Amino acid sequence: MKINVSKKSSYIALAAILAAVAAFLLIPQVREAVQVVVGILTVKDTQEAIQSFKDYLLGFGYWAPAVSLLLMVFQSVVAPLPAFVVTFTNGLLFGWVGGTILSWSSAMLGAALCFWIARALGRPVVESLVGGTTALEVSDLFFARYGNRAILVSRLLPFVSFDIISYGAGLTPVSFWRFLVATGIGQLPATVIYSYLGQNLTGSVQILFWIFSITTAIFVLGWTVGPLVIKRIRNGSNCACVPAEEKTEAA
Image 1 (tube, rainbow, N blue to C red):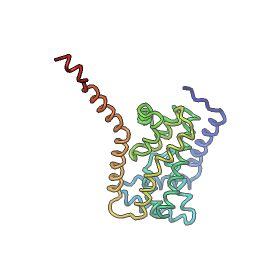
Image 2: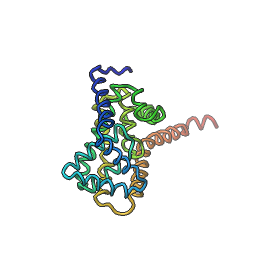
Image 3: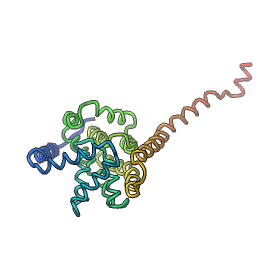
């Protein structure tokens, strides 16, 4: 199905990307801030990354929530960085309720921007943003396998790239509002749990992250594969059943 997009939408999306690139190249403060954040979010020790990001945000005082929102959107659109570090830190700084609202709304805004960039500018531009065709293959597989449920299923799996699915959805005929609702519902459980764990940060963050990821994966696997298994078992049982009259005739 061909997706019709107005030239105005394409121009707006392209202008937004060019403005962001220009700001990075021409404004030293923006470039320095991006480099600092990328350095923090790529630290291998998750707890150290959270502490460093917390200290960084606190340096902005009352502007800390706005900076966190902008950074979440930034990582969604142009930098595949670990967003759960931002979510943990928001829970740590603003409490699990405030952290959930901030992280969830930031993720929704980032997802919407990715969707419209893909919808307005097409696959070649998206491939350049995400690093080639291989990255988009994950999205292609999800939409081929689950169809309209692909967005919700992928949002429930923490180890599936949030950004790739957002871009990939924009390349399909799915409506924006269906995409947004599925994203909002699917993203909420992880956001609430990460924010709560951030507020009550104890033990190893990495262990907590993987426990939650594995548990969620098992749940989603059961939800998606379970009905198919049950259907096959029922079909097998029906095939094995032979009416009594047929057994008598065969004898």
